[in-house]
Image (cartoon, rainbow, N blue to C red; front, side):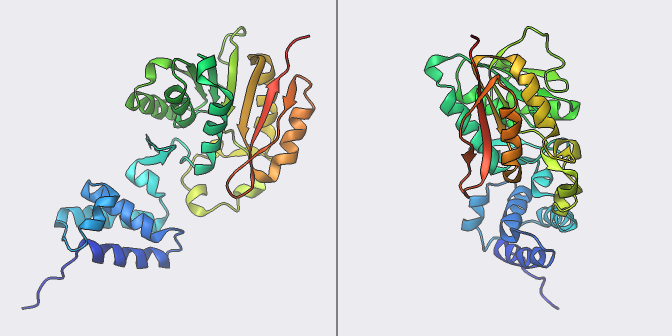
Length: 293
C-alpha cells in the first residue's frame, strides 16, 4: 500500500511558492509564508523552526483555500485581514485601501512638524480609510486630538476598530463626510494630513489586476487629471488651518509639478520642498498656512 504524502511546512512553502510564480505574483514566497502562518495561527517567523513539521489536514485545507483565492487575484492583506504599517498591525477589509510603505512618509513628516513638546495638536486626517494616519498620529503625538474623516461608512467602521485595538479611540473623532463638509464652519486644525485619491482615469486601467479588481475605486481615482481631489483639499484646508498650520498630502510622483502648482496658485500657503521616498521619488507635498497680516 502506498504511503500518504508527507506535506511538511517546508514542502508546502516550496510548492506554493512555485505555484504562485506561475500565476505572476510579485512576491510568491512571502505570500506563501503569510498565508501558511495565518492558516496555522502562528507568526511567520515561527515557520522557520518548523520546516519538518506536518500540519493537520484541517490546517492544510484552510491553506489550500487561501492559496486558491490568492491565485485568483485576491490580495494577501484581504485574505488574512491585516497589514503592518509603521510597525503596527492594522485590520483591513475590501472597504479600505491596503496600506503601502510609501504612506509612512506622511507619518514621519507629521512627527517632524508636530513636535510633541509644543502640543497637544488638533489634527485632521482627511480620507482616513483604515485609519492608519489617524491612529499613528494619536499614538505618536500624546494628548493630541485627531479628527478622522471619510465618505465611506465601511471605511470608518474599520478605522474605529483599529483605533480601539490600539487604545486611542478616545482621542479620535470619526466623521462621515466629503472632505470638511460635515464639520461646523468654525472648526480649525493645526495639521491636516491626507492620502487622497490621485490616480488618473487612464492610469487606473494600467494598475495591477489585484488593485483594480479588489481595492475600492473611489479611494484611488481622482479624475481625468489626478489632481481633482487635491485641488478641493487645498481650497478647503486653507479655511480650516490655523495660521502657521500645515497641510501634508501624499502624491503620485508623476503629479508633483501639477500639485505644487495647485498650492502656488493659493496665496494662503507657503510651500516647502517636496519630500522624496527612499527611491528618490516625490511622495509628500507640504505647505504652511501663512499667518494673517
